Image 1 (spheres, rainbow, N blue to C red):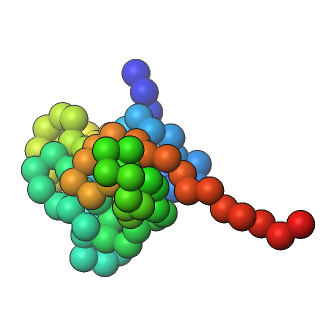
Image 2 (image 1 turned 60 degrees about the horizontal axis):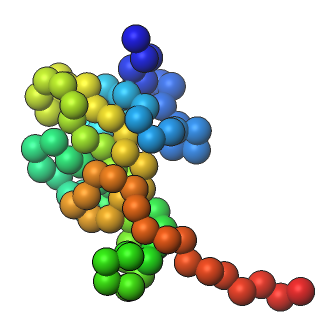
Length: 103
């Protein structure tokens, strides 16, 4: 069985899509600032992580650190880290923008 991470050992820098976390990790994320999305089964940190091009529209859109509840309820559930997703979504998608560098 996969380890379920807690606030003591969950780190965004090393997190991988599919990591399981406790509801306490999600609550800590929602308390950083007002959430971008907070509904049954989906919670997103309020500050965008980055921007990606949405292949459906061609526009750059912000992405947010995202969690989805996979077992139990909001307070006692097991959540999955979904990576950085468009607002209201729970799957990472899109294209990273191109950057021009001097040199």
